[in-house]
Amino acid sequence: MTTIDSTARIAAGAQIGRDVSIGPYCIVGPNVTLGDNVRLVAHVHLAGHTTIGARTVVHPFASLGGAPQSVKYRGGTTKLVIGADCDIRESVTMNVGTEDGGGLTEIGHHGFFMAYSHVGHDCRLGNHVTFANSATLGGHCVLGDYVFIGGLSAVHQFCRIGSQVMIGGLSGVREDVIPFGLASGSHAHLNGLNVVGMKRRGFSHQALKDARSAYRQLFFGEGVFADRLDAVARDFAGDKAVAEIVEFIRAGSHRSLCHPDRQHGD
Image (cartoon, rainbow, N blue to C red; front, side):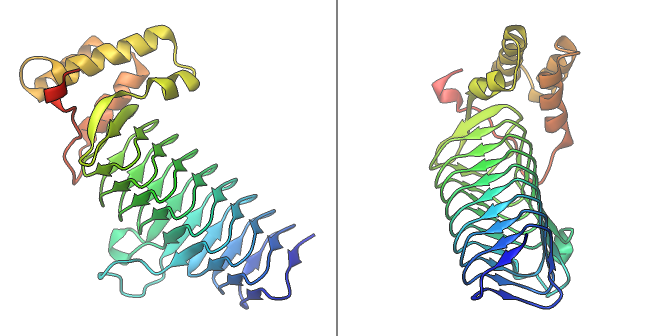
């Protein structure tokens, strides 16, 4: 049974699913859609053309679907879509997209967004993503599945973060981070591979060994980087993790690629 506290304000036009719980002092705008079993704990503000997937829980003072923090936004009908089974904690902010950025900010399922974290306009996030407290994405970022961003870290706009990446706390990410990468630092550098995360995802001992060998060859080998990339693709043909890294690099983007700090070795 859907329950709505008497102090909540639900605008005409809002779509409310089955067994939704809307707590005290929540505000739900006219273009908001709540999936089944969504729970708004209290003092939640939902605006814009925002859709929240089933069983997602939103905690006090979160503001979702607000206008983009972009001088290029022209007030158009852009969207925020949040997947199922997400946990959105206190004071989290997520903005709708912009007309020039595709018009959509998209969050996958089973995301965990700790207090004060922020997702900027036109970002695309995969599934099982975790943001620690005050982690921040600029606009137009793309994140793969199982990404972890440490507390008080910030990712520059237009950056790509590959799947199963871990970003350390207090990091500033200005470049694309390869899948399975481990990056940290005020101007973040690669610090190797997220081996712990890969083990948790079921990678075999041999797969981990191959991924490490490919990483060393790619970033610490001799010769031109493009040639090393081709060599890695050839030498580790058939390895899914290495193939994902190679494909990510070849896809390119607005940003350069995050590399290790060679002064500190492999």
